[in-house]
Every structure is written in C-alpha cells, then in structure tokens.
Length: 83
Image (cartoon, rainbow, N blue to C red; front, side, top):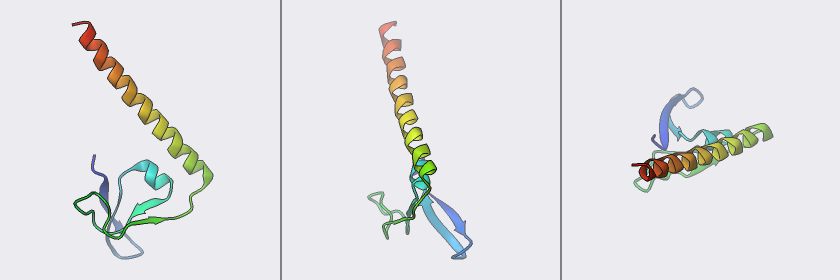
C-alpha cells in the first residue's frame, strides 16, 4: 500500500495528498504537499489534536498489526519445518 493518497479538500477546493496510514490519521497527523523521493511530504506534517479514543484506537490497531505480522512469520517458519 502507498504511504500517501490524494483526496479532494473541499475547504481548499483542490486535490491534496494525505497519509494512507489509518493510525496516522487517527492520531491527527496529515501530510502537507506532495511526497518527495525520500518518502516525506514536501511541506512536512500537519497535526491537530484528536480525541483520546482515537489515539487509543490507533494504539490498538498498531498492536494488532504487529501481532498479525509476528503470526505470519511463525506460520511461514512452521511451513518450512514440516516440508
């Protein structure tokens, strides 16, 4: 999945690029400007205060994604052991 995606901003009246990372958006972190070659947004990041429940949800999602990746690795290793 790409790190950023484009959407129409009705307040600016133009297409803008935002982070595709759900947990970034839940934490109130948005990319400003096009993505440069190094993967960072040209004008940095914009932050806004998000409700505590959104931050908690972002933490839970991050933990679950980490656990899923760990389980995937364990499954792959187990496949090799039983060949």
